[in-house]
Image (cartoon, rainbow, N blue to C red; front, side, top):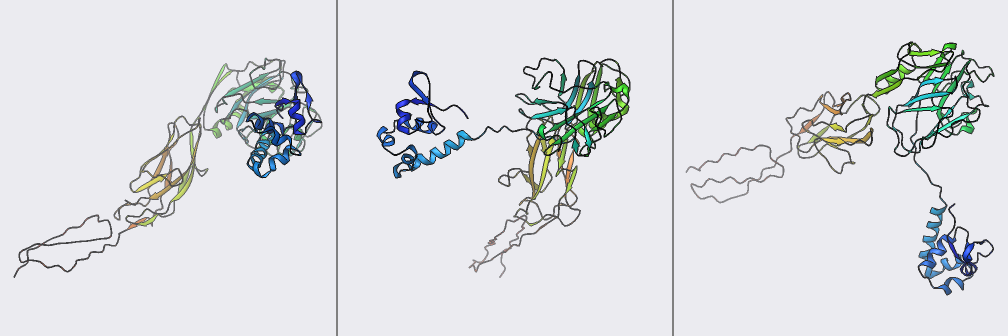
Length: 451
């Protein structure tokens, strides 16, 4: 709770908060939270007698002439008491991956983010293992990384080393209590959730894990772990003692630089391939520099393609729309929905329609609900079956929404022609046509009447 505004002792007595007021310098007192409101009222020069003569400030606010102030007071008090909530990026298995680890002094490790993360996102690390698939071992330490202002884009690399200067880095400690890698074998897990729940795994999301230097085991030794049930694709075990200090090198040989490119799934598959890690048992390994290039991806409803059911309408009226959840990750450009004859699109719930659309990205991500329909101008003679509505972005594989192989159609609009009774002079050509529908093509022929 923020410190209450300061008001005079005389006002505090008038408010009825003398017992709760605390003396401060210059004859001012700090009141309970409600004084935020009351001091604000006084600053607007409310009549002093009004609130001093009432039994208490609440009765004053609830008086018939002050009910508007009471409502404002309640809302302001609620806002002042509400905790500050800061948005975080929710991570899942494989969104962070380990690149390197050293158990020789100084302990250190390196990870890569495979997803954009916003500022204030909290990522936890622990060298506690598992005694069973869903039961964590306790007794070892925890380290926390809080993403600094500005966030991080996918492909960003984080490095921690024992004893490092942590000011401005986002790391919680340079020497966490009980957080130390055993040279004869240990493990490191990346997760989100309350560290106090590690044993039960309640509310814990495991993101990545590594076992090194010793075989998988459920024994009580701190160096041992089993593979947790929740980690399948983001898990690597390097049981040989030579892996006490090591890193992903793309082979079993040492190197000074590593470049990896591909989709997130492809990169993750590479990083957990035990045949592509270099290690040694004696001294700390010198981590190479890493360049991680993540291929942009577009998905439709979480898949690489989608098929629409048949669109049907009558000329002059747009068909019913169908919706598709479009998302892009690791993008370097916006997503373009390409034009297909006869179709139109909306990304604002149907308020605006166009024959092409651009889904803008925020950072390297984009998402939208894409509505698709046959336009009112689609012709009855058009071909709308087995069409591909392509979604593209620079560097990404083009994805498509396919229309049904049959059944897409535009019916002709019924045309009503009325000829009224007319008096025509001999030798005059007359043709008067009225119609309720838009006319695509109408040929009229007139002839001069003959006697």
